Image (tube, rainbow, N blue to C red; front, side, top):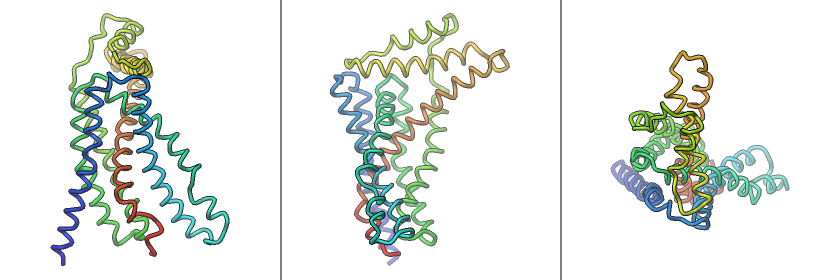
Length: 274
């Protein structure tokens, strides 16, 4: 019996990994060919990614909201039907997902080191194993209807704490332009001018992202610790790290949405009784 359960758990783990693998590979394709997209192609890619991301955000929000309402309101109450999560919640999820999708695609399409794409591929088994780990740990604590979503939330949090510092550490060993002889404006214009894309919209977003990075790199090269303006240096690096954190979180939201859609039939709050 135990061996059968282990075999079923292994099959589920492998299936989850297979379902997740297209996510990083599609981003690899975006890295290779994204700069060739037209305006319409880029908008379609952003909206497609955002819809996938929003679907997972919406469905997980439905689980949380309906479990809460089941303990707070009677099923026959009209407010139960109004608050259980419908078009308004879906629209809010989509509006939150669109900027995250744009940030993720711009970061992948921009010329960067291979460490980002390698990290995204390696992260697939990490996320799946973390979800399995928390699912087992929560069996004796969480109600069955909330256990899968709670396990995924914990896995995402731990995964972020592993992936973001790992990518940040890898980025420290990359080579960056030397802005020592340039003014801040020259550095930002120089880095923005290196961005090329068929889509004017995509190129503009890439130039904004490049200018933001150039600001951080220039301050890091020009202002040593203990200089007269350490606050500017700290603020610039904070902006750089915050943007990178959004890229990592956006990717994790895509992966979480794939897992949510795959398991939705068993995760739906209406399937459990405890």
